[in-house]
Amino acid sequence: MHGTTEQTGVLQRTGAGQVAEVRRRRPGRFRRQNLLWALLFIGPTAVGLAVFYIWPALRTFYFSFTTWGAFGNYEWSGLANYQELLKDSEVRTAFVNTFWFTILGLLGIPISLVLAAMLSRRGRKGVSAYRTLMFLPVVTMPAAVAIIWRWLYSGDYGIINFLLAKIGIQGTYWLSNPQTALPAVAAVGIWSTIGYNMVILMAGLQAIPGFYYEAAALDGAGPVRQFLSVTIPLLSPTLFFVTVLSVIGSLQTFDLVYVMIGRTNPALPQTRTVVYLFYQKAFIENDRGYAAAIAFALLVVIIIVTAFQFRLQRRWVHYE
Amino acid sequence: MSETAAALSRVKPRAGSVAAHTLLVAAALVLAGPFVWEFLTSFKSLTEVAQVPPTILPQEWLGSNYTAVFQALPFGIMFFNTTVNALARTGAQLLLCSMAAFGFARINFPGRKILFALFLSVLLVPSQLLVIPQYEIIQSLGMLNRLPALFLPGMFSAFGTFLLRQFFLSLPAELEEAARLDGANPWRIYWSIMLPLARPGLMALGILTLLWSWNDLLWPLIVTTDTRKTTLSVGLASLQGQYATNYPVLMAGSLIATLPVIIAFILMQKQVIEGIAFTGSKA
Image 1 (cartoon, rainbow over the protein chains, first blue to last red):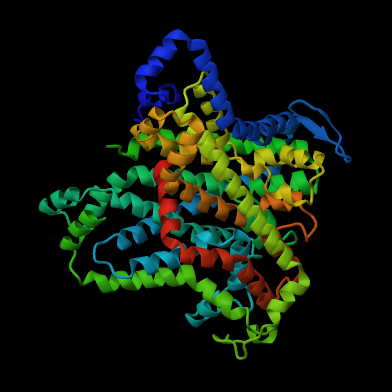
Image 2 (cartoon, one colour; image 1 turned 90 degrees about the vertical axis):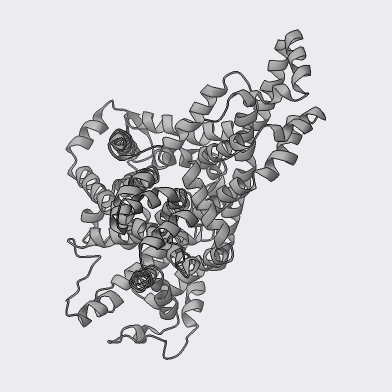
């Protein structure tokens, strides 16, 4: 899409004709000059990424084949961590919990879509006010979100249980009840991303040309029919983007669980996610080799799930 | 939006409007209501929040929860740390990412494709995979519990480079032609021509980075154990450790920690929302 021809960039910097001439005469010097400029522009970030991202990723991979002692010493242990990992019920539970967070997290997308569609309607009053209010959770730090919701969920004096009692429903200790803790945290996850997805989807809705709706209306399609046959297919690339992001984000759930479910909470085993377990192994138990293996297992899962989504997109995503 | 919506509104009569607003108000209440409750609770006494039925407005507006927050933790210093962290990461990323992005978009050099592919591969790696060795690097530099530890790795971003490269590629090359003919070198072209044009992209990246760094929890949790060296996110987590169920104090702490971002958002909501939508369309 983006032309590569104009990207010859610096080569043309003294004007096309002249450059061509220079190039013919001294190609070597020119390449070297470009390389120097590239070094200047890209060098700092390249070094930073190499030191703080690429090297660490490789090193974590190496660590995943080591076993750590009590004093930060470690030795090569081959596939031992991975073998252990497959048998470890704690790890399995963490992956299952993460899986549920991911599935439940997806429920936020239809909600965001409905809100986005409603706010995108012409003549809708107060769009900017609604959008601002709905976006507030997105800009709030997860640690604060978690604390606010602990208060709302509080078993004794929480507003949620009070409101439920008013309509005759007996609430529970949402966050320490092993049966409700995971959905309760997942609901907060949804709550804090609805605004984000909504804004992205609204941008996608704006890009749909009006004549599709006119044509559908002429064919006698009502609003629901139009939504299903025009909006959804034409918005599908954006929906796909939002879905992929939501899944990748949910697979890495940490902050909310860390702050909402304390270390002594009886529901911790039912809510502990993979990243939480990783943090616990790496920085509390100092079992870094094992933690590294957990992180790699998660990476593999992320890659598989994302690749799967890209495969699946052929079935439902329409690109014009 | 206009044409789409025009077609929509032609189909659906006004009657739906009331229903729509009812639903939108309900959604706004669920999404923004908790902040109102946070605000009100932060001024109530511990005995007041234990009343059934709960009071809506505080019987007496107490400031003591706020003083308790500052007594429990060096919140002022954490505030400073968080600000420095966010500004350093954002400033560095805006400069370094835009430079690298310009390099990839406008300079033709051998190995560009391979290098760019390497940058892209960094995008795929989740942060947990990096933190153990990152921690080791910070430790070996003797920077644990020191301010630069908070922002050092976060100054570099493959995402930012990618985002801005896409933006630079969408700018027509003719814009720089005149400068080239005048003999401007690539740095001048980058600094005086491309950067001003890249404003929307820079804005989007800046807002995202500010937000992300302000709110980040895992990294500061790992590299700082000293409460005077850490950020508000970690501070809130440890405030919770001290005031397990003293919700008025916890609400006061949460409010202080988030208020700057919320105010900044309300003041710049147009840019923030456009920035977010922008990354959605580019990434």
